[in-house]
Image (cartoon, rainbow, N blue to C red):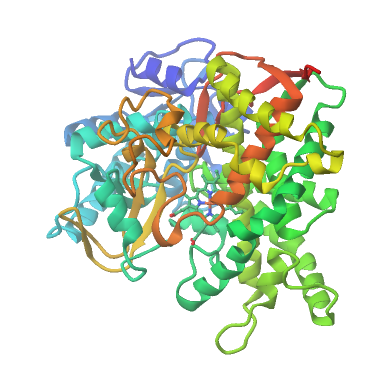
Length: 603
Ligand code: HEM
């Protein structure tokens, strides 16, 4: 049963089943070899990387067995829902990374690097007991630290792993709502858990959202969990506070406020038109997810940062993708892990960006460039209360932050829109009518005048309602993190200083007392005339002080791209059953390939 579960849930293939010990974990040789392990007939090792980790093999050449018998038994005895299977039930990559974590951190750390240790089954069993002893000791210590506190109910899982694997697994299958609902049913809308080695309190109701997002900055800060901060940087707008935060935010807002955005509509029209032409030229199939990621990246580079050079953009894009991948990876640094690759990519982005920054600085000093030219120039021209410029690190970190905040989020929304429009004829025909009306109104004017305007964007009401409903059911951002700066009380529970708190949009978005028939896709909920949505209930763009300042930018970009797509092309999904999967961000699982052809507009 355990073996079957492992094989089913990891998707690992195995050529034959050997052993059959229900409490052993089987990993196929092909899986290990494809991840760099070498097999010498009896045992595996990774030459070079991990000379002192060797996994015992038994039953011939087909399977390696990692025996967590004792871990399993002890976890069962503890009766706290601890499941060592979680260790190996993630994706192949996660399984390997977690395996490494367990072997590397707990078993092998103390050994001399030049001494190869063969971990045969009995050694692994012995090590399992040691591991469990350490884990329970840690758990005991963790508990005793907060013994007198009234913490929310919930499980912290295993100290090292917490509930990371089951959480990431649920997201991967777009079952985040189920993961949350299960815990809400068991523990209530405020519950504790531990993700990515960080104890956390999840909040899934309006009162909790209001308390967390509405509190002053001395109660909760937007400081991110360690693994996310390492990827974003220490000086992003989320990590800044006080006057430095206000200074940087004002600079960003000067580019993102609705008044200024009016001027970008034509430029967005140009960028979308050119990108679509390039992408569809000579092709009958395009991959929507890749296209949307590139489009939103190009738009941010061009409009916000004035980076027009195509080669520079492409080099940046590859590294940004590695950083995104790392957000979804188990936060473990070892050569070749996704997390390490993300950190290296982050460093390369900074190095590539620094010469651009220095050139802008020089041009600003000679007057060749105005601070209103782009966000970087604007940040460089800032002076703090002492008349000092802000450190370069702040500019670099916020360049990376803005690209990350603006690009994948909007690419998610656009991909979800195309996915939904491809499979729902009625919604598609209402959207098409809205856009054809706008096009018909422009038929009589000169070509240059046919570009979209701010007024046209305001007329795309129904299309935006579809987008809003998609973000209700599949919010691009799954959690908003806060850190308690002092002991506080949330819904009757103690929140210890230093703990991470996460509001979960799905908690209220799928609440039937707020959104009737929440599993039904109904854009009319967002029609002004229908039942008003209470504050802090609908939070895809967050709420309160730190709510998204790019929501209007995202709206214009989404509506412009959908306008061009529906009016210029007809398309159909290559895989009509394609589902949504979330590796942090929810994208169509196969990248959403569509067959496209130019739309014939009746004369
Ligand atoms: C569909 C697209 C987008 C979604 C769903 C989204 C979502 C969010 C959310 C949920 C937050 C609040 C996070 C929190 O409270 O912890 C946020 C903040 C932020 N977003 Fe967005 N965002 C989107 C697009 C954009 C764009 C296009 C930009 C910039 C051009 C942007 C810039 C920012 C910034 C700077 C913040 C931080 C504000 C602050 O801390 O004061 N976002 N976004």
